[in-house]
Image 1 (cartoon, helix red, strand yellow):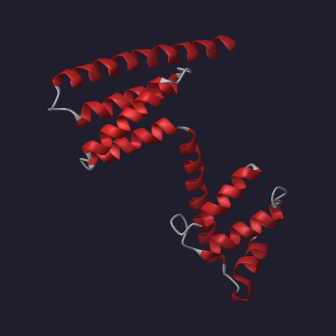
Image 2 (cartoon, rainbow, N blue to C red):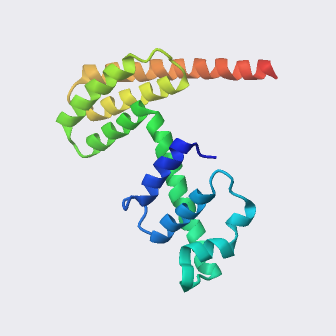
Length: 181
């Protein structure tokens, strides 16, 4: 179940033409939001949703199934979006990848320095930290392949070190889970 804050964000998401171009999905959201947080099974049936979304036009069962499918797709994209918002370093690494692929070296360099500084300040070095570290150095290695062999070598060593750290931390977590059983 979504929190009240997530429902507010989902409303904006559903109403954004970039994420959703169907007015019927907006109507379905309004209908479900009017029932939130006590949505009952009978609220999700064909008749009440069809009456609310399609009104006098009277939708059919095929349109209803397509509406639910489209709504589910928008909802799943929203869930991906809110998960992405939680890991800002990973998102910035994705930006680096996009900049590298488009050969935007100056923007890459500026963003890389910012991300590297932000990432180095992370005090909670858990599995995700090392995954991000691996990806960050991988992007740097891929960007500067032929230009600077010393930087390439340093990135390869950093990737190797982060893989080792990620492996060790993962093994410790698995050991603790097994021990708790």
